[in-house]
Amino acid sequence: MPNKIVSVHNIHKFYESGHVKVHALKGVSFDLHEGDFLIIKGRNGSGKSTLLRQLGLLDKPDSGTIHLLDEEVIQMKEKLRAKMRLTKIGYIFQEYALLSELTALENVMLPAMLLNKKIECEKRAHRLLSKVGMERRIKSLPNQLSGGEKQKVAIARALINDPKVIFADEPTANLDTQAANSVMKILKELNKHDNHTIVMVTHEPEEEVFANRIIHLADGKII
Image 1 (cartoon, rainbow, N blue to C red):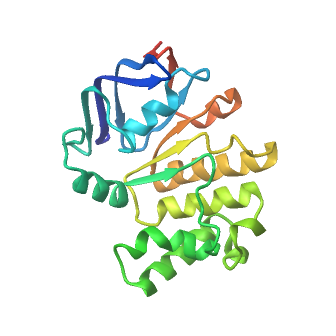
Image 2: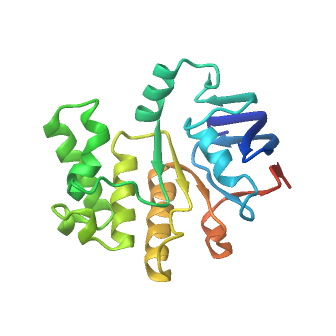
């Protein structure tokens, strides 16, 4: 049996929307194992991105437990949560989240610069950009790249510190069909051949074929 990467038990999350209290997650529970490619699907407002933010340590649920690599992370001190985000988690955002003044290479290097020497970071960033087919664009700024190219840089950046799990929040939402297919093939290759565990939010039915597991959320519950 593969090692358990994430264990979620009975998490609830509330937030304020205007003067209304919204119950965004309602008792969500599941386990994620090493090598899984999990897709979280559901309509807008179903709680998909809210759930991903809890798993990626970008937010905290109001109750329940989340174990990441056998460590309970909800009660963990913020300094340790920040270290875990940097060293154990890779995150791919819908809007790329690249720094406009940095080249593709520098954007990829940035998370690793907090942990390693520059020369080590640069070598690894070169390798990862080649892995995602961006070796010829390493000196390009984000405004010189297409949406698909930006997302490939973001994938390389997510891999730079060799994370145990990669979280992707609708990584193809802003891409055309060809670019989206290219990004999904890269993610599947990382999962299948490099054994990266991936959790991805999407509402695109055609992307479900890339996953070995699917969670369907509706109104904050797994259905």
